[in-house]
Structures are given as C-alpha cells and as structure tokens.
Figure 1 (tube, rainbow, N blue to C red):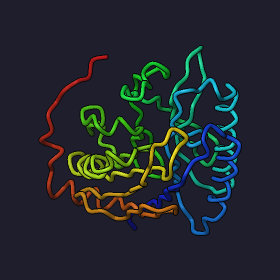
Figure 2: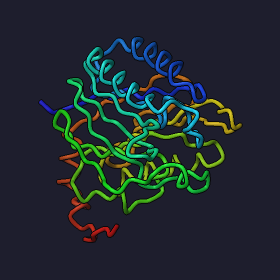
Figure 3: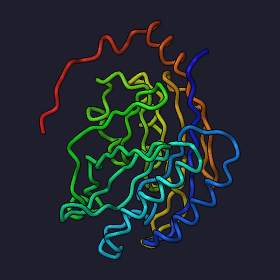
Figure 4: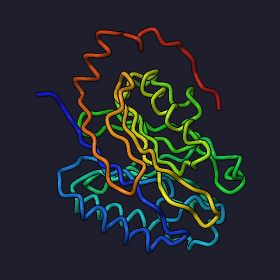
Length: 258
C-alpha cells in the first residue's frame, strides 16, 4: 500500500493584531473538519495579520499561540503548521511552527524578510533551512517571500513536500500562482501554498489562491474563497516519477554561504 497524507489548507481572513479572535476563529474552523487529515495548514502570521508593529501585541502571545497549536494538534490528531509573531532573545521573529500531534515542535524563522514592507527592519531574519520528517514524508516548510528565491528552496535534501504559508497580496498574485507551480516542477516535489483572503487594516487585499501542485506541476486543488481545501499526497507518485524522469539526478551541485 502506498503511503499517503491528506492536507487541509484553511484559507481565511484574519483579525488585525487580535490573537484571541484569530485563535477562536481557527478553532471553529478546525472543529468543522470532519474528515481525517494529517496536516492542517494556517496562513503566515495567522494570529495577527502581516503587521509591522509587533509591539502592539503582548510579547507572551507567541508562546500562548504555540500552546494552542499543541492543544489543537492533540485534539485533531493532526500536525498543525503556520507562522506567528514570536518574541525571543530581544528580537521579534516571523517564526513558523510545525507542531506534531504529540506536541513536539519544529521551527523555522523566515529567511527572506520582505524589505518592500520593511519587515527586515522589524523581524530578525532566519539562517537555517528546516527539513522535517512526518508520516514517511520529508517536508520543507517556508514562508511567503521565500517563494521568490529558488536557490533557498532547492531540493538538495531529497524532500517530498515543499510548503509555503503566506500573506500574499492581490497585485502580485500571478507571481504566487506561477512560482508555486515552478517550485513543484523544478524540485520534483509536491508544492503546497496557503494564503489568506480579505483586506487587512492597512488596506491591502488578499485573494487567496491557496493551491497544491504535484511533482509534475499539475494543480490538485485551488480556491479564491473563504474555505478549507483538501489534497492527498501520494508517496508513490513522487518515487515513480523521479525514477522515470531522474531530473533531480542532474541538478547542479552548490553550497550556500551565510
């Protein structure tokens, strides 16, 4: 029997700089998931929206959000992934948490902070790529603006799934659509992207376009509305396609310097 995992992508508006309301909202949405899923994906900065004023949030909110993720992961018997504003070591981070059903966490700090919005001046950039294992799949989670940088995402670790959590605005949504598909094709991996919808308090519109692409770039699911999307990823699809086409064997060898 082939290994499979099912992913739920929660495409939702966000309450601006209001962690309590966002956690209540996402708990309701998760409770509405009736089918068995292995991973639940939430957007970038899902407790606050893409704020450049993290000082408006209590510094303890990050830790409380992680405890909530652990509680919900146990309740739903599913891993949960999303990024939040997180205060640590006298710095703010746009930090992604991958929370296993048993409460274990893996973290990734956004490498490419969004200079156009001044994110680089507010949040400390990450330096370490994360590749984790879950239910027989190797997964590489990244955040929003990271999508524009193919070298950082390059599949040198033979991962199976590349995922992006995002707040990607409407004026540049064609880039989001195009690059998600490109990352799948060039890395011979499933590529999964979850984006928010609605308008934030700064007037930016977000059109969703959450989607999943298979190893050959075929779109498996897509939406521009407020809803939960589902997709099942098949390990055999990855293995058989790579064995047949062998494109990753011809990839360029390189190393990244900090």
